[in-house]
Amino acid sequence: MHTLQPASKLPRLLGLMLIMMTVLISGCVRDKSARELSKKWAPPPSTFIVLNDMDIHMRDEGPRDDPTPIVLLHGTSSSLHTWQGWVDQLKGSRRVITLDLPGFGLTGPFPDDHYDMDHYVVFLSNFLNSLNVKRYVLVGNSFGGNLAWHMALAHPAQVDRLILVDAGGYDYQPKSMPIGFRIAQIPLLNKVMEYTLPRRMVASSVRSVYADDSKVTPELIDRYYDLTLRAGNRHALVQRFKQPVGVDAYRIHLVTAPTLILWGAEDQLIPLEYGQKFNQDIKGSQLVVLDHLGHVPQEEDPVKSVAPVKTFLDIK
Image (tube, rainbow, N blue to C red; front, side, top):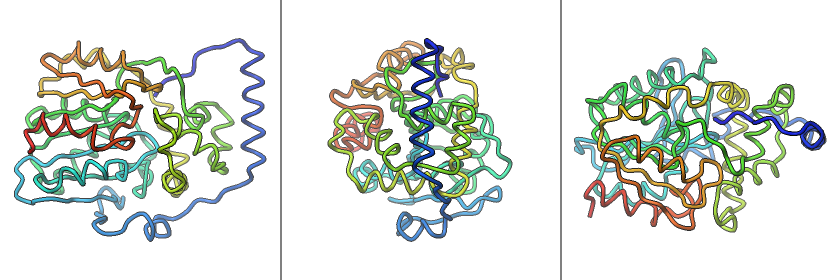
C-alpha cells in the first residue's frame, strides 16, 4: 500500500521510539496454527481446498446453478468474514464465493514468499478454475479491489462485472493510516512485529478504518487479532508492504467490464478522491458514495452498502 512520506526528523524519531517501546513491552506473542484457529473461525459452511501447496479457506454459498457467481475479495489483514453481512443478503438468489487470500486469514502465506500482484492474479485464476467457475462478478475491497481490477485486465472475458469497494490501485495519500500498517513498513520494527503483537494495536488499527468506531466490538477485534497471529501472516504482511504502489495505475483506464465503484465518504485510509479517480478513469463506471461510512463499508454497515450492489446486479 502507501509508502510513508518523509517528515521532520525529531517528531518521527520520537514517534518511532514510542512505538518500539510499546511493541517491546508487550512481549513475545506466538504464532497460532490454522488447525488451532479453525475451531473458532472456520465453522460450516467453511471448507478448505488444496491448491498450490496451500490449504485455502473458503466458503461457497447460494444456488449452484448461478451462471455468474459473485466472488468477494477482502483487503489487507482481513479475511472472508468481512463479507458475511453481504453474503447473508445475496446468497438467497446468487452463488457467493469468499476466500482468505494468501498471506491472510486461515489460508496463510504463499509457500514461495512472493507477494507481487501478478502472483495473486495467477493464484486467483487457478482458484476459480479449480471450482470450474468460468465467468463471474468480481468484488474487491481495498487490496482486494486492487486485485479485482488487475483480474479484470488479465481475464476480461471472464469478469462479467466489476465492483470496487474503497479499492487500492493509485499511489494514494492517506489522511490516517492504521498503526499496524505503519509498523509493517518500518525496517527493523517490522521484524519485531513478527514476534510480538499488542492487542490494543490491532484494536486501534480496526477502529481507524471505521467511520463510527463504536461499531468495533471486542469480538471483531478478537477476529482480526487471532487471524493476524496465524502462522506466517505477520511476515507476509511485511512482504506485502514491500510491493510497489501505484506503478501500474496508468492501466486502470483499460478496464472494460461494467463497473460499480462504492466508496465510504469518511474513508481516511484511501480518501474519496481516489474513488472519483477510478470513476474518471474507467469509462462508463458508476460511483456511489456511502455517507457516514469508512474504509470497510461492507463490514461497518452491510445492509446499506450492499443495496447499490443489488441494484447494479438486478437482485430483488
